[in-house]
Image (tube, rainbow, N blue to C red; front, side, top):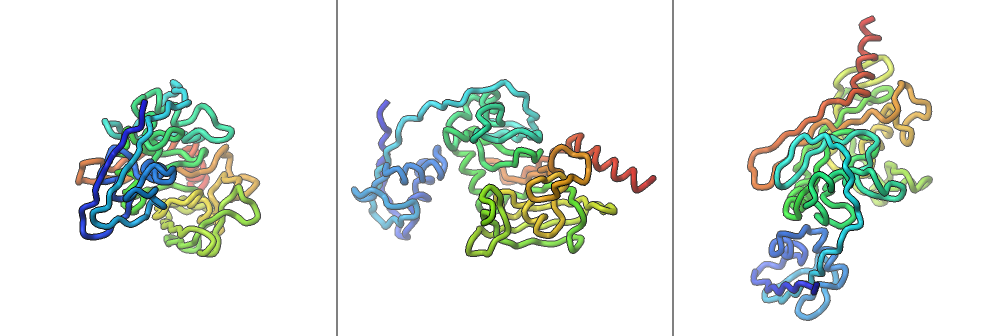
Amino acid sequence: MNDRIVQLVYEQDQPQRLDKFLVEQIPEFSRSRLQSLIKGGRVTVNGVIASKSGQTLDRDSHILVEIPPTQPSELVAENIELDIIFENNDLLVVNKPAGMVVHPSAGHQSGTLVHAALAHAEDIEGVGGVQRPGVVHRLDKDTSGLILLAKNDATHQWLQDQFASRQVEKVYLALVDGAPPTSRGRVEAAIGRDPNNRKKMAVVPPAKGRSAVSEYSTVRKYPAHTFLEVHPITGRTHQIRVHLAFLKCPVVGDRVYGRRQVSLPLKRQFLHASQLHIHLLGDEALSEFEAPLPEDLSNTLEVLDSSISA
């Protein structure tokens, strides 16, 4: 198959970013996919290869986009049962179990959420990228709860834009060792690679990381633990775990950022993505999705509750 050629003319008086203009003109592709075409030298402006995605377009600029044929994915669909909370023609809302990796990576070439999604909705192949089809955001392997998967590029871009503009409300439930300094609060602390261990994240000076904001409130207090509701305003890698450890109240069972000796009989970290509030494509009303605490976490709370009432 030959490349598809798209020729465009920018006719607005006000300057605009190249990638933003392309998203408007080629809505079936996500911004990340169009940015990769720009980076790959497949977009020219007035006969010159575009230098960057943020390049400014002036009136009467002539843009040519070379779109290569879709490369077949090497991912193989796997018939893995999914706990689907909601589904329509545009997306899946899945309650991911702890222990499942979201997408293929080193050491995880099978059994991921993506492999399962491909078996359930084969049209998801190639959406937003060949290796991570449909993925809009992620959850850690040992974090359970709600995650979105886009079924087409238009929805992928729609959801990505909502996450980028912080319009998505995410609610997590976490049981921590000890207690935060106040019953409710807000953490504003940049997160970056731990300078002493590149496999971990850490709170770092603003110049060396990315801004990160989390809000929390206390749901229930126990003698040695606190049950929290956490709202991550930003979406940095391991953000909630790092911020709670920064407050000296790490997530129970978190062997990376918390105590080496787990304080309760849990085989994973007590962190669950319980709610997602988001606008679906074409809907003005806010959609709210919820996933209950899985059995291992609810049982842990029952043990703590019974120890108090005994």
